[in-house]
Amino acid sequence: MSMIKRFKVSFSKIFAKLFKKKSACIGIYGPPNAGKTTLSNRILRDWVGNEETMGSISHIAHETRHAKRRNSISIEARGHSINLDIVDTPGLATKIDFHDFMEEGMSDAESKKRSKEATEGVIEAVKWLEDLDGVILVMDATDNPYTQVNVTVIGNMEARNLPLLIVANKVDLPNADPGIIKDAFPQHPIVPISALEGVGMDSFYEALAKQFG
Image (cartoon, rainbow, N blue to C red; front, side, top):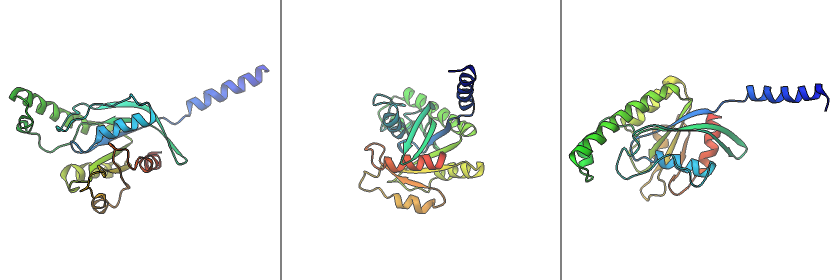
């Protein structure tokens, strides 16, 4: 290969690298126990490896108390592809009472510590909104969607003019009704899934690539 050809090949590689689109940084938000970490873990297992997890899950609220980020997850779905940085955020709540943790069997000291950490996690999650390119809002399809948390997150995203994808999670449960969520927030795309069982994930990935690509 001549020197000129080698130069052209090298320059093309450098040019492509310089102008390669960066990953979109997407935050996964929602109330406690909506399934945010379960969804994060499902995304990692599907696109990174079976042993990969973002964090542990628990029936006790506020298991995730610090935001966790995983960079450069490449997702492809039905002709659409996207490279994402995923941030699993602590559950948002308008009130955190240490007595709720005591009812789960925790000691007084442990409950107060958990309550303090959960409150700090909410503050951290709100701060992350400044650095995101979009949000996945996870809602429990068995709960009433008209909560202060859901309305506040959606209002914030609309004010910032950032893309939002709503996930109606836990459709595997018999009392799930994703249609109520769709009726509540018709201005945004909504995908019904079960992150735990893997139901509806193909549609989720396609919507994810379309919304944030």
